[in-house]
Amino acid sequence: GEEGTYYVWSYQEVKSVIPEANRNLFCKYYDITEQGNWEGKNIPNRLMFPDEASPEIEQQLHQAKSQLLDHRNNRPKPGWDDKTLVDWNGLAISMLCNAGFALSQPDWINQAGKAFAAVKQNLWKSGTLHHAWRKGKTTNIATADDYANLIKAAISLYEATTLKHYLDDACTLVELVDKHHWNTKSGGYFFASSKAKNLLVRTCHAHDEATPNANGTMLSNLAKLYHLTGHTRYDQKAAALLKAFSSSAANSPMAYTGLLTGYMDISEHLQVVLILPDENTKVQPLIEQLRSCRFPITILTVYGQADVPAHHPAHGKKVLKNNPTVYVCKGQVCSEPITNLSGIDKVVSSF
Image (tube, rainbow, N blue to C red; front, side):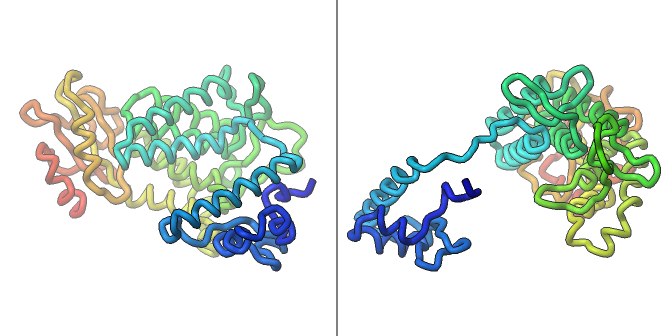
């Protein structure tokens, strides 16, 4: 059948299904007209909030909707695409994790972690990432979008949980996407893998479409990994990526919002580094306190004194008087040590 027909209604169909007693009321509240509100047909669209109508009206509307639903159930149903896609799961995991972190919803973060584990188990096998999975079978080699969004998800989970294996996964995935997708001639990431077969052309661009472009997402990923690890290879790769598309972004900035966001991550990012005196320190209350502050464009990382990576700007920093200590860093420069967490806002705003 024609796409979308399962969900839309002509005025005559609504008229034939809903008795006259409720019909006009339903059409008024759900934007049903003879002209239609979508390509000559109607998508039922509630125009008024439920609290603006009386219980009696709500009962009539409910009855009318039930009648339409009964009628719709007799239509041929559209196909159900239930594949698991890496790129879309990566987006969902990252956003679920970020929302859970910002709104103090640990269940959301746990759910994001479970989804990441499922993607890793089913779609990342023997060093190869696949694009889709269904009923135990993987299909197609991963695209740059798959890598970029899964790396983003791993970084988000690391920031929210401080579990190092997520950071390790992100770094490993960057190695793979560099190996199979990097454009060695002009910079940037090809959409298709070097392992993909029967391609007429391998596209390499950075403008966003219905979903964020992999190159913009990777720019943010590389910037964050540089801040998190201090390894200059991520900073160098980010610079090469930005150089490849900067002129295109300058000519049409609204089409390159992902790339511009990545540029902000490189140039404006602050890092709030929490260093713990020992492994027995209770981390979660400290993270909760830091989360309550509202920082612009920041990364929150947690380390033991001996665990700060060698290339990290906070390497060698110590705790004060055996208390959890915070450093605010930008680039390779860090603030004085802070033990009174309530004073971080002032440090961030002046850094």
